[in-house]
Length: 254
Image (cartoon, rainbow, N blue to C red; front, side, top):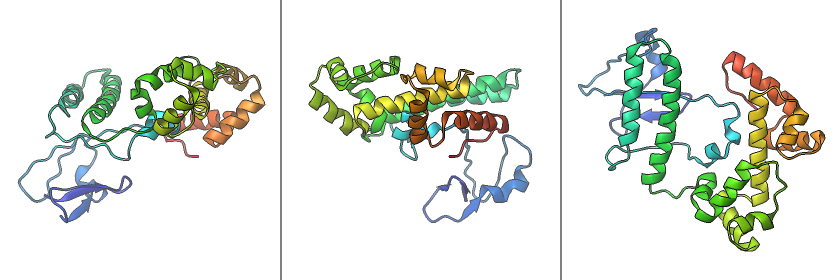
């Protein structure tokens, strides 16, 4: 069995350390146009790979993506680690093989479910201490404060008010929030506002001023400056680039 690696991802998969490697792109002539190809190289052991991907428009600004490690690995040998994921993969395989009309849309939803399954399973069995947004959400006291921020990002939140919702003193709340989330509560409020603003700009036809008001800014100019600091471009440019990326089916680049 030889190793197949995808060069842009810079990951390798092998049956043993030091095994001879072969890039998937070098096997393109064998694959042809088959969406589910069979590749034979050496050995007698059969390996089945089920691959999928997400294309995220500025996904790196979402706190969930920022909280994840570069690679999540669920080992089948860990009890319960892959039970749910395996059942979802089975549904994906069944739908892919059926060829029914509308199957593509259903596959998109199932892959989204698989993404959630993997994250939840990883949190439950990895043994690693979650960081960032995930760690803060798992904290019983911080969870309440985060829920309030998420439900009303336009509110003029104060440290005193958020600490009270967590039933903590301001100093204790600020220290725990910074330790788990990696930023201060007020920095998180701004980050969540920018995340919601980016969503509105990508998916709705509201004016920049209207989006600014939705996330708590009375001044469009102040909002534009804050958005550029966080995302890297002004709201209008971000919207144009989002539309162009959607049309070209390419991820956004800063």
